[in-house]
Image (cartoon, rainbow, N blue to C red; front, side, top):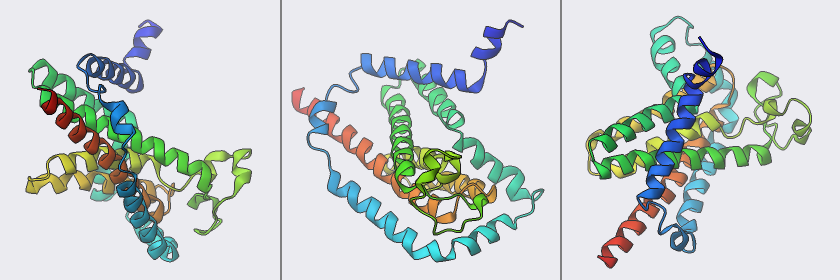
Length: 251
């Protein structure tokens, strides 16, 4: 089989193509038409409150990080939660898995000419990307040691991580959990009148369990990532409301 065919059929390459298609289609449909006006009036106070609540939650559990980590990791490697639920959470955390799912749903509803539903899943992917970007930015400031370094849960701002094994000092917050939480939180807010919307928030919890079980993150890392996801989702949901109100005003 030619090498280029092997490359384009890889999940990451398919994800990149899917995201590019989604962005091009949404630009052509005018999704970002009102973005400039929204950015000038960003609801930063609400975002700040969400992140502050997340930071308070982290402070409340950080002393128990090592104990919670040990309890999660005591789950047997061949048990049902590990083989099914935790592995699925890990798959979602690898962003190409989640975005392939969102992209497939976007294409499906676009082919059915269900514009509103397609836009919903594009917005979820956008919230996921924004959440992941925020998390990775914070990582480079916090410089927290990961559990496998065995330096304890209180090792922050260890800036030698910039030059020596950088990923070992990028524990806070979890990028994988933030990516899933961004999409899940947006769908949670979007389907606000549906009682089953809580199912979406179960997904980042699975990813959090996967990251903690694999000794990649402290529990408090994943807790703050949920707040980052909600902050990103509130911004994207706010933009959708702003864009719809502007469109209705012009019609």
